[in-house]
Image (cartoon, rainbow, N blue to C red; front, side):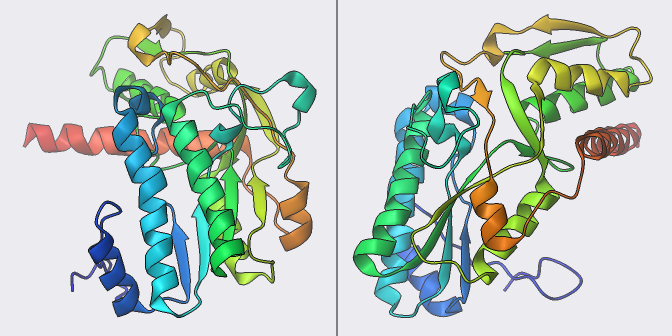
Length: 291
């Protein structure tokens, strides 16, 4: 079994959401107490190019995992990770977005997460699986993949500071309004979700306290740069979605009351840490390339 970290605490067991047999084997072998189901095709823009693969992985993949859990006969607590994208194109009358707001999918990804969301609730009610569902709003921080806007911006700034690219940040839709939270607060929320005494089948919004447009987030990142006076911003059409979920502002009162959770890491710290992560990453790659 491959050992992941020097602390000798984490081990990998191979499974595939597209392969029912592999999921059956992993669940039976591990006999888990908790399952955090975060596996997905998780990039909304990519879902426009690969809608069928996105739906298969996210909807049928979730059904396969839940079937493996139900067939196992034991009763782990299961976290099914849905997404704030299920709300999609929200009418302003529904702001801030509660768990009762209607679905309004704006991408194949959001459609797939609606399926994931409903499957989790259904397996809890119909098959007695101890499932809880979260709809996490925008969260980011160090190690965030560069296919996501804020991490792409931070990476581009780090490359500009190293003179690796011209001082132009290429962007998509900057008008989308988001409520931002730190990934480390998100992980703490997920832990509390499964270790608190919550009834199966419940759905919870989770998100931060600070809201601003993607454009204002970009201005904040640029303001942290040593090259802020030289940087220009240009729209890249390839970064624009055909449709966009452009109002993502939640109420998370239900989850906070149920668990006592609240965000601890502020927007400024998150953005600083994200940019410094990419600065270190880019600097390491630059050193490696010179060897």
